[in-house]
Length: 120
Image (cartoon, rainbow, N blue to C red; front, side):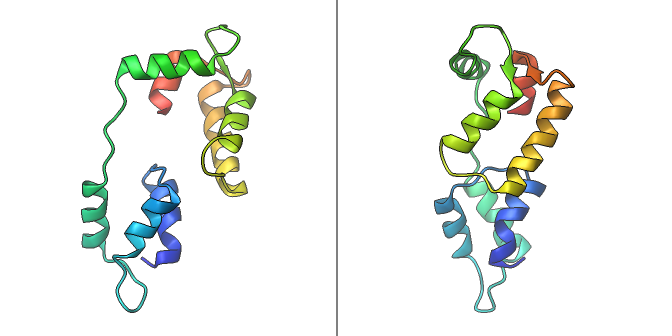
């Protein structure tokens, strides 16, 4: 793949959330033609794999995000958080997130802890 395609592949196809620094590190694997081989990409993914959060960590995160203590996260709350905290999502990434949250949260847009855990 090309360096330009790297972010799309990682985020949309592999459900990763790399930082710009992660993308720069992976881009260093590109050959002189700007391409990254499958072997190099796999090596990068293995070397930079992040452990899955524990249920305790997820519960703490859910509690922090559930500001009103309702036991649910509102779809709009989550969209606001991802658009204001950390690295900015592109409009395409926000649209993809919206589709996922609609699927997970249903028509009411509410996500409970079990759904949140599966989402993460």
